Image 1: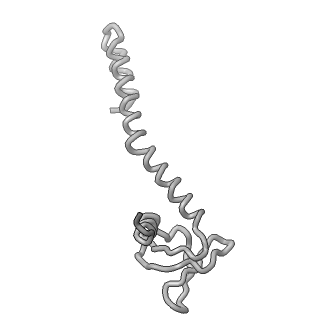
Image 2 (image 1 turned 45 degrees about the vertical axis):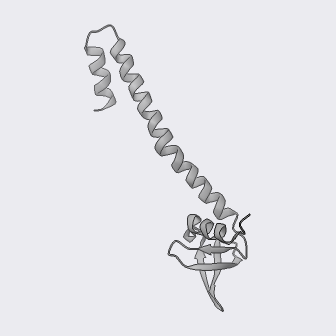
Image 3 (image 1 turned 30 degrees about the vertical axis):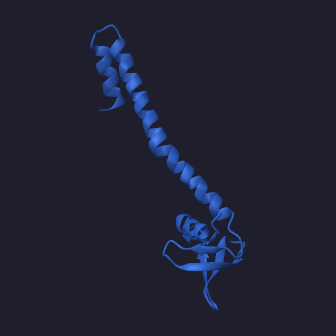
Length: 114
C-alpha cells in the first residue's frame, strides 16, 4: 500500500480522526524499526571499514577478500598497497581488497593471551 492510499483511506472513513493518527504512528514505528535494525548497523559497519583501511600501516599483516595472506611493504600515494605474499613475491592491490573481518581475526590470534 502506498502512503497516499493510506492517507486517503483514513480521511474518507468519516470517523473521529483517531485511525488517521494510528496509521501515522504505525508508519513512524515501522520507519524507526527499519532505521535501528537495518540502516544504522550498515552505516556503522561502513564507517568501521573506512577507519580500518585508513589506519593500515607498513608491516601490518593482512588478509585479502580472496583469502590471500600477506604483509604490507609499501603504501603508495594513489591509495594502492604493495603486499608481500611470499619471499620476493609482491603484488599491488587496492585498499578495498583487504578484508577487515579476516585481518582482525588473524591479528587477535597473534596477540598473547593474558
